[in-house]
Length: 261
Length: 288
Image 1: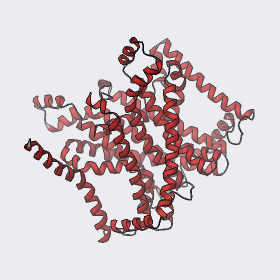
Image 2: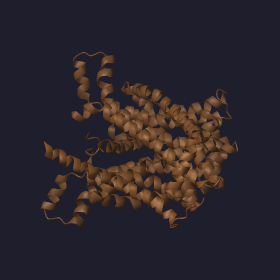
Image 3: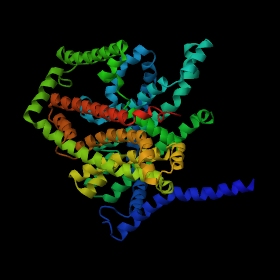
Image 4: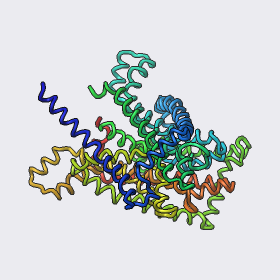
């Protein structure tokens, strides 16, 4: 009993080392190279300077305002996409005819870069919050819609037939068979659309906004406040990673039944 | 880890589910039912265009916001004639091809290398994951800072957007080659180099191509964003420019062209995939 435990413990130390050494090296280089002026500190300030600046902007409350606005935009667009795209996806594969009817449109838009439509959105909704909401919503909705459609179509026909042979009602078939087997697809779709909505958020904030993290990054770059720019970039990347990590955790939790089987 | 691999495979499918229903040849092969669905698609496209023409014409939609389809076509043809369009098109094509193919040239060999030397890969993996997960556009100002506002910054940001996806897919492709294949090749006395060339590379091809398709989708997205944010030429700039000048039909022409371009790139890569993996139907996708 002791032996595997010890072995496991040894493994974790090694595991931690392996997982951190590359990033630690990266951070080390970030600190040392600008300090020794191998890289000009004007293009890349040392890590410590950036972190101090980050702390200052957080403490002064300036960063908090931008974070709040960005999060609000991203989350409202993203959750609206979740609320619309998931049910819509299920409806679109309700029957073969319905699916055939919608398929060409879905195929066309999944391949259209959402940012190409941003000028159209700006034209229709103006430069305000609505345009940002719409473009994030649009970007996030397609991966979700497609993953729901793919998920439903990948449900093992045997399950459906077995359930039907036991004369299950349509509602029960949906909730007890189709929905559970679609969930892994939906979760993958959620992660992809979360990533893409971050891209859309940054693009929208860089193209005509007066607040938000994307704006802050671009504005500080123009004003040559480079350390602040890096602080904003770190914040934005961390938010993206936390979101991604949270969704991975959710995915693991909700698909336990799949792993054990 | 497994969820990540699945996510990338899934993402590949999302970026470009085979456009079966669009390729006429395949439909003919499928016979009558296929012809039916082909006609259905034509009918749907026709309906969309007809509505696009009718709604502004009858004033159901403000023709300023959505000009008539015929106007869009006419104005876009005008752009073709004056050569204005091709000026932007060429700039975009140069940017995207240098960035995208440059990214491929870097990422595929490196990915195969990292998949081969697993220990090295294990150490570097967290950094690669971090780079891949950090939103590309966020880094664009850094690239501008490093390379100025010129072509270099745009090409390198496109490259950045391509590299990580392709790299991760190449690594997982090489790592997940069926060990039985490797063992049997070894037992027949195959040496490292030919093992790599004749067994591992072909077996990793489907995964690499998934990465390429994803990378292509990413690089188009980034190209447009980079051209919108700080540029004076290129298709992304063109759309934005016409929007700002209220040359709305021209703007729609650009958008439609970009949509068609996305479809074409996707279809081309899908065909490439089918050709390169004809011996390897399905098994790598969704074994899970």
